[in-house]
Image 1: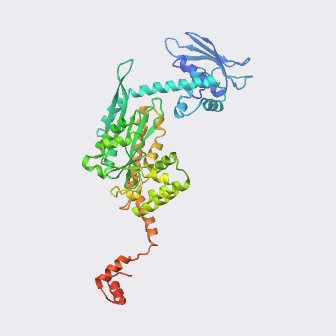
Image 2 (image 1 turned 180 degrees about the horizontal axis):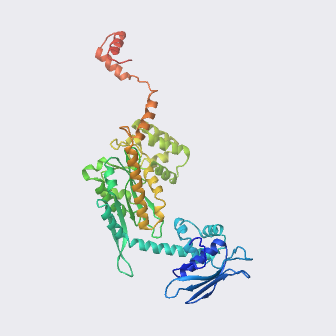
Image 3 (image 1 turned 120 degrees about the horizontal axis):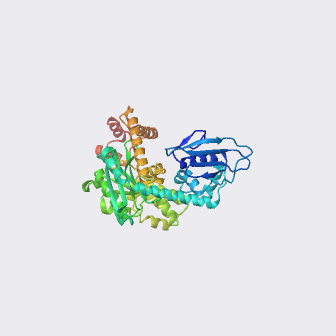
Length: 471
C-alpha cells in the first residue's frame, strides 16, 4: 500500500482501501488525482491535469462487498510533478505522519511543515500543518486512553508468565465523567529477576525521576543498583502522577519490601539521588535509617544557582568531594573558604556525609559521587518515555530482559574468580602502587628505641634488620 501498482482486475475489500491506494500512488508519483464519479456501484478517478489520459474505473463485485478495477488507462502524458496537490489534506497528512509526530513530540509547526515538504515533494500550508499536528496529537491521546484500559489485562499477563513479580496499581479518587469508573493514578513494577539479582549487588541504590512525554504526562520513577562488576542493575520503576512526597513514599514503601530493607537493616544501605522534590521527606517517613548521598554534579549546579560560579570554585568543590581523609577534606575546605567566604558558609549547611568521600561509610564498598547510574538508565529509556503506558512498560520490560540475558551470557564465559571490570581496576592500582616506597614513621622508631633502651645506634640498626625492619 505504500507504493501500490494498480493493475486491471485488482480487487479491493472496500472503497476506502481503494482511495488509500490511489492517494499513495498520487503522493509517490507526484500526481493530483480527482474523483469524477462515486456512487453505490462505481468509482471513477482520473488525473486532474488537462489532456492526461490516465483513468481508472472501479466497480462493485456482484453479490460481494469487494470492489474491482474493470477498466484503466495507466499512461500519463503531458503532465508534470504536481507541487500543489489537492489530495494533500490535514486528515491524510496526520494519518501518514502520526508515527513520526509521536516519535518527535518536540517538533514545532514550521519544523514539521518543512520536513513533510522536503521529503514528500508537495506543498503544505501552515494551516494544514497545524491541523495535521493537532489531529495526530488527538489521535495519540485517544490511543493513550485505550492503553490505560488495558492495564488490568497487562497485570493478568504478568501473573500468568511471571507470578513472583511484584506490581501494584493505585487508582485515583477521581472518576470518569462518562462511565463513572475510577481513573488510573500510579503503577509500580519490580521483576522477580531484579529482586533475586539485588542479593548479589552492592548495597548502593540510585533513585531518580524523569518526565514521560506522551499525551498523558506523568513521571517515571526509577531505581538502579550496582552489581559486582560495577555495571548498572535496574531494580524497580513506577509510573506516577508527579514527583511529590506521596508518590515517592508509595514507591519507596514497595521498594523496601521487595529488596528486604527492614528496620533493623536500614543502616546497611545507601541511597544516592539528586534530592528530587519530596524525596527526602519520603525517606524520613519510610526508611529513615538508610544513609543518603547527594550527587555532587547537582550540588555544583545548585551552587552556581546560588551565585558561586567559576572554574576555581568548581575545582575547589570537587577537591573537597574527592578527599579521602578528614584532614585532606579540611585542607580542601580551607582553600574554598579562601576563595569565597559566602560559598563556604553556603556549603556549611550541607553535611559532608552526603557528598564527600572522606565522610562516607565503608559498608557500601563504593565511593560513587554522582548519580550517573540513574542518568544512564533514564537516557536508555528515552524512546519508551514517548509511548503510551502499555507500550512504555513493554519497551522497558524487553530492554531489561535483553540486558539480564546478555549479562548472564557474559558472566558464563568468565574464567577468573574476580569480575573483569574489577580486575582492570586492580591492574591500574597495582601499577600506581609499584612506584611507592615504604618508609618508617618517626613514632615507630621512638617506640623501638624505648624497647631496646639506651643501646648504641649501630646495635639498634642491627636488631631492626634482624626483625626485618629498616630505618
